[in-house]
Image (cartoon, rainbow, N blue to C red; front, side, top):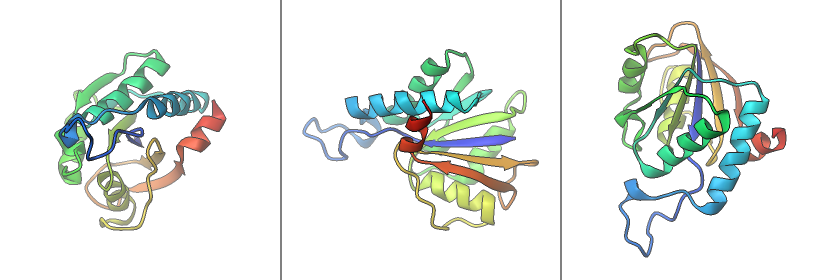
Length: 167
């Protein structure tokens, strides 16, 4: 199984004049433009996704929708409470494993520090290793048997700029 972890695109500031709750923050026009270009870079890499899990927070959901539009495919998309900033990696792994048909390529769209902690858990067996996920950045992990612990290999970690150069 290949796990692709995508941090949401650039969003409005945490404290905005509109007074939106954190979960309602939307991606900015700049974030939308950069994410569309990054998604085109993902497509140029030959990536494909069987399933997309996304945080229900607005900025992550919008990011996942941009990727789905660029790919013009209909991968199954599902919300996951475990991809929220306060989500639990172990519960997310259980949710993936409970999928109707275990997918080969899964895109997870979420937030920091949750994505970095998930990378750390799957690669080293513990959360807390120092990994930096830029907004709009994408990481690829490969695993033969997904579990909550050391089971994956970090294949690459790309910034949105790298992805954009591939478009």
